[in-house]
Length: 128
Image (cartoon, rainbow, N blue to C red):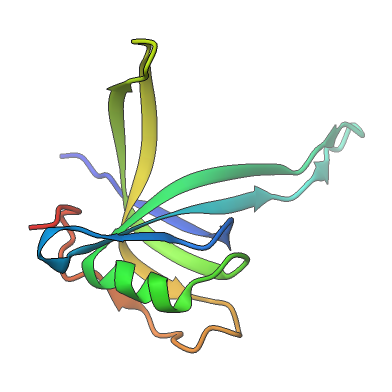
C-alpha cells in the first residue's frame, strides 16, 4: 500500500493564472508559500526562517473558484497529491517540475467572500 497525500497552509504568491481548455474546462496554476519560523536551539545556535514555494494546480470547479476569489497574499488550505513532471528545455537539458494537484481548497483569509471548503469534482487531476 502507498499514500500520496499533501496538506499545505500558506500564502498565495501571486494571483492564480487561469486558462480555459477545450470544452471550457478551467485549469489554474498558482504558487503557495509556506514558512517555518526561525528558532534558537538550546546551545544558542540560531536557525533562520525558511520559506518553501509550492506549484499548485487546480482543475475544473476549484480553478473557477480560484479565479473568482483567490488573490495574491490570501491564506489558503490545500489538500492534494504530489506529481513530478519531466521535460526538456530549449537546450535539450532534462528538467523536473514538482506540482501539487489540489483536490480540496479552503480559503482562510478574512477578506475572502467564500470561506467554505471546496471539493474538486474531478480528483484525478485530469480534464476528463
